[in-house]
Image (cartoon, rainbow, N blue to C red; front, side):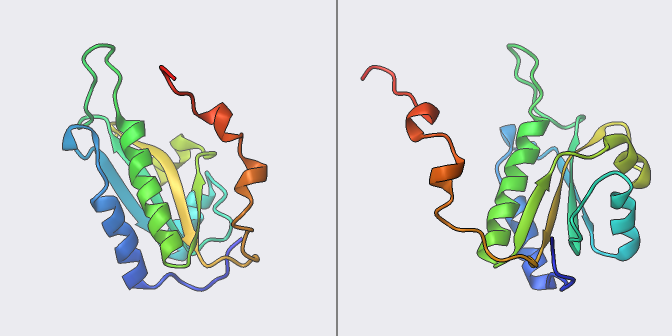
Length: 158
C-alpha cells in the first residue's frame, strides 16, 4: 500500500526520462506511456486493476503498428520493449526513494475503453508508483525468495 503523498514532478520527470532512454528493438520505440495522477484517472484505472492506493500510475502501452518483427518467426517485440521501459522506470523510482509495483493482473479491455485507446495500442502493464506506507523490505531477502544461482544460470563448455 502507498501513502497519499504525491510524487513530486521532478521525480516523475526523472522516471519518464529513464523510460525515454531505454532501448527498444531496432530503436523503433513502439511504446506509449499514459501518466495518470488525478483522482478521476486513477478511478478509471481502478475499474480494471488494483493499484494499491498509489497516487501515480503509468499505463505502458505497445503500438503494434510500430513494433519490430523478427523475420524468422514473425515474433513482434512489443512486450519486450514495454518491459524494458517498465524496468528502467522501476529502477529509477527505487533510486529516488519511491516504491513501485508492476501490475500485469488487469483487464485490458477495461483500460482500453476507459482511456479510449485505438486498436493498435495495447496496454501491456500498469506501473504504480508512490511512497510506501509499509516498512522497507529486507534487502537480503533474495537469498530466501529466489531460486539458487546454479538453477538460474548454466554455462556451456565448462
